[in-house]
Image (cartoon, rainbow, N blue to C red; front, side, top):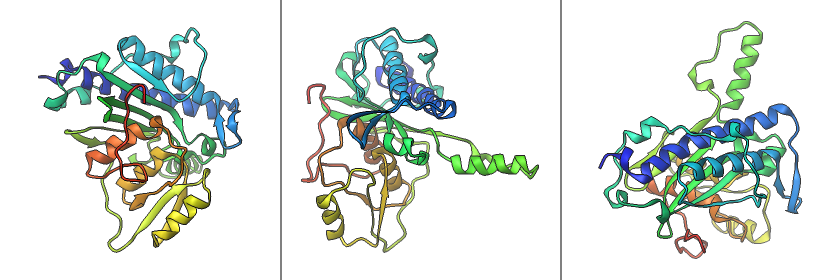
Length: 291
């Protein structure tokens, strides 16, 4: 069956464009200078104007195109009319050219649950650590994460700043690597795309873990693994990207705190390239709408 006729691939193609729109919103809020920060449960659990606008954009755009989906977003937002400029109606055509894995070709809209983290790494976002930030849209079927999209709004932003500095000095422009932002996507049984898979240097055991939500248990667990190095960064999506790009061997967070919208999309990307994400006991995570 052509992927353009399957619900799953049409949904992934839409989620790709919608995640890119959300990334633009995240960048725009920073550029405008008013983050609109509020504390949710504590000083490390924050919400910004970007979280709110990006979730409104993602959830409203998905619901308009796929009205029978179950969509679960991180932010608890009041029901209100969504500005038309927040709606993204396009689809990424390159995804529609890919074949849908046969086991998912007959999936119906109402069978799918979409888990949305509109801005993963909010605390780092408020502190200017922008390369930690991701937009996460994960798609689950029968409790299993099967497709996902990760947008990095500030991928290459350091190179982009260097390019602007060079242009200001009338020096040669940086190459295409200075393009700001990127989108990674994957479907189980098809693969993961938008990045270059790399291995950690041979013989190195590098752990990535939380930057903002550490405690003694987390620290002790990481230390017990006797790593060669420990990376402490923000965002679950960001840490999974460190694994697939060979910057870390394992992501360890031995504490409650991660939510399903943090892990659904990244889990798909990791599993699609042969990695594995479980709870601390090795059990697979469930993504039913009532989980």
